[in-house]
Length: 393
Image (cartoon, rainbow, N blue to C red; front, side, top):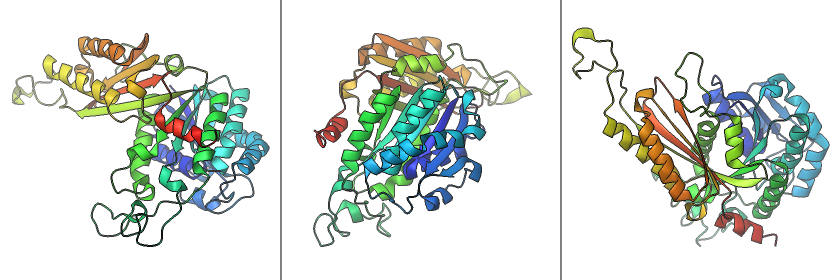
């Protein structure tokens, strides 16, 4: 499906920039914009040209609003129409969906996101989704400059990098981050078709800071977004999916009532069936593609479906259960064993308890990996979301 991505604030802008850098030619990316109150932050975005970056409001600096979400909301209400017009050069009417990417614990981006979602819903018939980064608990804690657990020598804010050569960037101190995230989640749920939270804390490795992990986590987030929205789009002239995934399938899977949805994704490298001859020796210059052993294809598909389901998702799925589930299996066409995919779908129905299992395939003729994307929606509230909501109870 063709999605228009809008990165709001520093976190959202970095994801928008990364998607542009890695997927600009891909047909699923209908448009990309980055909006921020901080001109310096916009200036660090390498892949997005000036025509796709836009500064709004009068705040400046790394946290121009000092974490004041109410000020951010006022800013969003005042500038939502302006931001909608700033997207016009990207021809947003072509999009089948909009995705607002934002750090939920901030003020400017998180404050403006609900108003922008409402504006996009007013202007276009396409669904508006939100992909939001949840703050880590350590971001709200007071920094410790002594020799205690929060110090540079002992705690996570000053933990050494894996190489041990130099300390990782410290964890930012944002005392209002969790309350901002809870309030923004509620506001986006009221205005978006679905919300995809990304639990930063769950993805941190032992001893890793959010600053030190930023680039890696941005890569994971961009990969999950591309895996979901790129699954149904294939370049012209390539293999046609047997089960075509379109925007309506995603909409049915995630719902339209602002529910929380989780994205699971896994890949496994495989040998290209087009290398060598059928005899495995490259003899006689045979141009016929090599066949893929059925058991190898079944094993690869089973592995990626189980890893995408039971592995680390963008947000915890309590007990793995969900009302609605979407499965997309991709890879070289010769590896997309229909029986294996059908078996995986049946296993997924039992695993999730979903009455509604939607599925599709994404052939990648020149690909070197089999992949699976599993989307779950209509689930019990994840523990991390419940913790955030308790901060404003």
